[in-house]
Image (cartoon, rainbow, N blue to C red; front, side, top):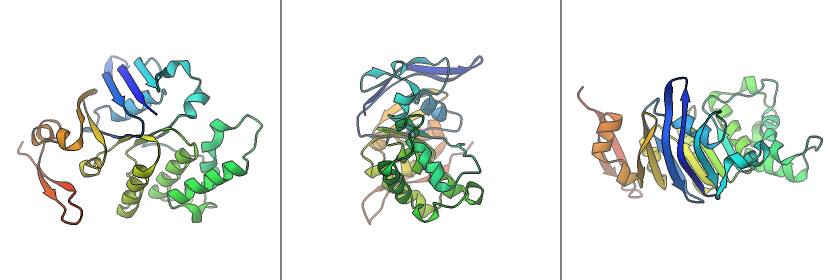
Length: 255
């Protein structure tokens, strides 16, 4: 799914949280959003998902304005996993993931065999297939995060929005999740704090003070000058001899 935004913005009272974001993301692209805390990344994802009132500008999916689509139509196209997402404590893991099928069902239509298979696949993809009967209060933070992602996958979106998806995950599950995201046949936008993880994206957008201040390939965006100005760190680029990937080693700059 191709995404475009034009002059996208939103404010809370007099304070502008996101301002004048114009962006083009190609179908199938994995696009990383990076920036300091409070730079507007989470709000931008919510704007793209059509979840904030009084939004400025326009979001278009494959050329169709989001404002022309119903909530059900949007939910069939876009899935968002937020940082602070929560789930009814009475639900089992499987029941929570089954909620992802809601946009595809009518009010009185139960889940069918095809829906159950999609849920199974989503649970397996995040490594939670053996915990389908577990209930929400018994799960760790990382397990809850994986259930939220499974629910989004069960939604079968064409655009997947992930806000800090590796939060709460141990290193194995971080790497497994990023590998999964890389293989998904969908357009992905993910907000990340880890700049080395962001190096694996097709392109990066840098947010600062609510604005998109840079956009391009990771090696073109994460320059020493940009890292110093936006993130207040110095960095040395290193090459991993195992796969020749570029890694960044950071150091604090003197105040």
